[in-house]
Image (cartoon, rainbow, N blue to C red; front, top):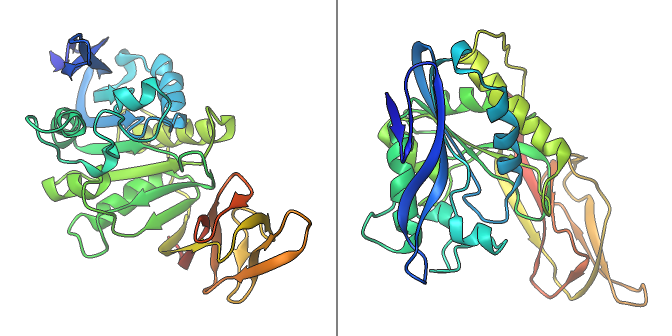
Length: 318
């Protein structure tokens, strides 16, 4: 019998339930939606979660598409799923937990006696570090972004190659291989011996069908490659960036991009210009390095210093 919160499944069974993590402001208990797929045969354990940031819904779209396709009779091992991590932010369609104004993916490994986000992080981290592999489904918030997969443990980490292999197997096409900030699950769990990736499935307001499909295919790639399912998966070469440059606007106005997502850019190439409301050019911003146009803001209006776009640099094929 495998238990995750109130979900409990014997070999060959699936169950759903709730993982208790506290009470809401009116004193009502609440829990995160969780599921257990306990395969009929022995094997590894995969932990998968989504909506660590409350407005990043493509991962939720992946889970609701993957779960109905899983027959535990065909599964070897165990799949643990938390469908919505940032409960409070999800309820109000915000990025950060409004109870403590915290970005959940900076709170790991958490604290069972800490803030709201730390308690949620601690409860989900227990499941993560009990697994053999972790897939933490994200997206580029509501910005526009390519489908990519992040390896956040750092190139000198003893599990770097295992995390990189997992990212290549997931197979979005692009990998950002750069050490992440403190508190990220994909940075913290490898310290406890668990290869972990952070797929960033595009960027959208609501669901984006193309990115949800890419994430669904990625999850099944992982399930097939690591023996949870009896299918074939041959990892394809991925374009990897180990640097990441962000660009802000030097002036206020309206942004016009000169390149599209996934375009190769050269050093000195114009990325965007900023005009006034009458169409007059106020500034042009060029690339500091060669790379791939990775991410951009969705709305055209910007203030001085406001984020506009990012370029992945130090490109190779893995």
